[in-house]
Amino acid sequence: MSRVKVKDKTLYELFAMLQKVLRGHVAKYEEICDLLKRQRDRLMENDPDGLEKLVRIQQDRVLDVASTEEKRKLIQEEITDRLNIQNTEDASIGDLMDAANITGSLRRSLDEVREEMIQLTETARDLNRQNNELIKQSLKFVSYSINEIQKMAGSGGTYGREGRAGKDNDSVLMDRKY
Image (cartoon, rainbow, N blue to C red):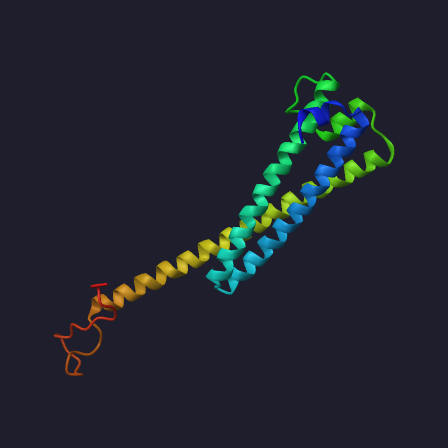
């Protein structure tokens, strides 16, 4: 989307374009939330291969969102320029619609998509937090397991070389030469 395509649009058309871009955002965030749920399942199932595939797909979707975000910013900047709004960073979509006197079905549609985006970003944040906790728990378990194995290997085991319990038992659970 170039500046020329944005510059020659009416204010109403710009808001309609904004609504379309935000709908695209919603679709991408729904996909991201689905991927985060599947990621949680892979974490719980201890499926590193499946997890790796999902992370790659997730990265692609995040790049898609970044691309769509550029389009949104371009449209919003044009709207704020036309409305002579100085603090473009502080202006919400609702503020812009108020300033442009956008009403009717376009207003309802933009309000609806804005609410969907808020809800989806909160859902994505919660899913990320849950997945982060699962990863932390997995790391704690792995760390605990490694420590226990090292303790067992350091103790020399229960039996010596000839199968007898004793002090000269230098068998190890893991060969440390690896």
